Length: 96
Image 1 (cartoon, rainbow, N blue to C red):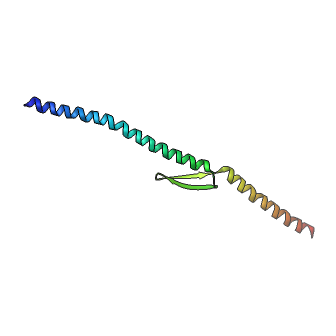
Image 2: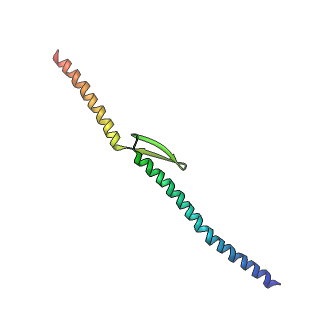
Image 3: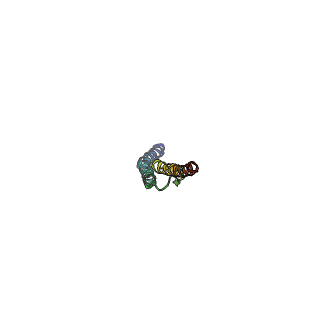
């Protein structure tokens, strides 16, 4: 009678180990697929480059997307506008 209980316990433990070996890697694979999807979404956001600074949330993580090229263009435009305005004002003041 003792050997039957021991056999049952060992057999149950072996089945549990086999189940863990099957479902463990499956869970890791599913987590990897979810990470891949969020990575693809993050790359899509980075490649859009629609604003100087944009903030998004992907899977509960806050992402800041900045565009140095757009910022440089924006600041160059402001600088050119000030140069035109002050150049015009300087010409008006110097012409009098």
